[in-house]
Length: 510
Figure (cartoon, rainbow, N blue to C red):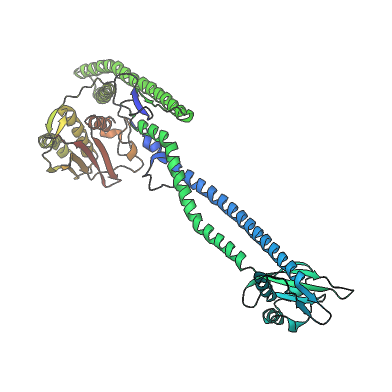
């Protein structure tokens, strides 16, 4: 790996195997950072939340900015139009000749463009008195008079100054300016109302709205994509750390995470994980030492008690009650000895003292032989042990430990089968793996107990009662043996209908 990526760095030599409950893997602990393909966002990922929150922020900013920009554009367009209307009104006033009985337009000394402008403005001009009555209606163009007669310009005609908007009967919007017409003498006040179409302003605003509304989704998509990309780059160091944490297991707790990242947050996370791993390693080391020491210390007194009890039972002068009591004690001592021996085996496995020899092991003769050995025990319990289809696959491992693991599973199935029940042993190869299953139709295991059946000394009630004679370490031993051979063991069970244990092992390649 490059120096910028997190990697595992062995801290001390040696690795161990510990058949207890696994710690959550790095992927499970960092699922919000690493789950899923980057192109398919998961709602619960931090990367998606960053992109989503940034998109909401960008959307809010764009809406506020777009609204403000639209209002500013509308105000500036209207101001520009108002100036042009005011200039036109001044031009009209400079050319207006008003008398008591009529008015006219002075066209002297006008250029061609000015004449055209004057004629165009005449079509949008109305002259009224102070009460809003149109003066000299016959002198006006037909178009404004048509609007006057339909009442569309009532508010405009009553205005005595300033700007007024009006919507004509054809749907067109106009903006009118009202100015006072200077008159010679003390005649009544007269007003000139000049309108201009708002079509140009509406066109500019409509163009802005169309462009803004169409560009908004693209801006949001672009912003989301950019945020998604940079959020991924920002979170990549944490994903590298998560990938390194995934590789830490109970077999390599002495390893630490090394990273070349200099960011304070990443380095703090790495330091916290390394400190946690060191604490876990110390705790597990103490547990391993305790298990090993306790097992060693218990073996000698148990052996002495067992020997002395056997010696006393050889006496012919013992009363029957005493003999029965000593026999019961001898059975309990034997069970304790098996527990201690199993604990010692697991403790040795934890500290790496259990060395597995590796050799090709054909499964068919091994399983057939074990079924023959367990046949007598199964018949004594009125249980039928049947061997189904067994693959001729070969695995690489320690035959003695594999034999012990499968024997524990068969013994477990026979013990907890119902009277006249059946135990089925089969093995099937699937690709590069072989699946060995042991099924029974016995009492089954409760769903609440399934996650813990492979823990040491765990007993489900009533399926793991003391009356069965088990030590509570058989399944834990099975789990260690199978995992030491690179495989896995699972269980499926229904309470009252039986259980199926499946051991998956890699097949030895030719």
